[in-house]
Length: 252
Image (cartoon, helix red, strand yellow):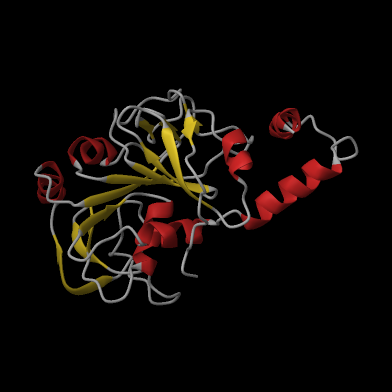
């Protein structure tokens, strides 16, 4: 099965030569993978009452829509906003209210708007309790690469380098594998680094993992219907599995 999975990733496996067991295994795993909204919902469960939280570009911005009821959380955007609300409904957008990813947003009662110098002062003074970032790659030592792909046009680093250098707690929301089926959880990052040994937890479409201080990805939860073996095959870095692994719950 391992060779068949490698062939899928390289695009060389033809359906007529794959074993029935592997086809069933692959279809079940794909069927039950979390989508981006479910990843955001699972991460929202990590937010505690009273937290100040910075949401990065991509999947992390979706977390604003799933803050658990009954807790008081202040969302910060590094372009100069404290008190960010969920995304606006279609037709209610205000082009002057955007997050760091240039998406239109809403504000909550009591929110404040300020310049980027004030915003980064908050970040560098460690006033942010939790940072949620997207990533292109994460290493088993907790290194993160999320700002540049050489030769390709990307939005740039934004405030990511300040955030990873100053944040008390960083959770990464990302896809477990890239479009070619190659793992993005690696022994070491191949892309330019944003930060070194700074990531504590990762949530992907397949799993929730801790990054251990001594190195390695510790599997905490798996997406419903996804086997531990499939996660092993999809993780290039050192994966640590202890005991029974419960299924993730997204509260959808």
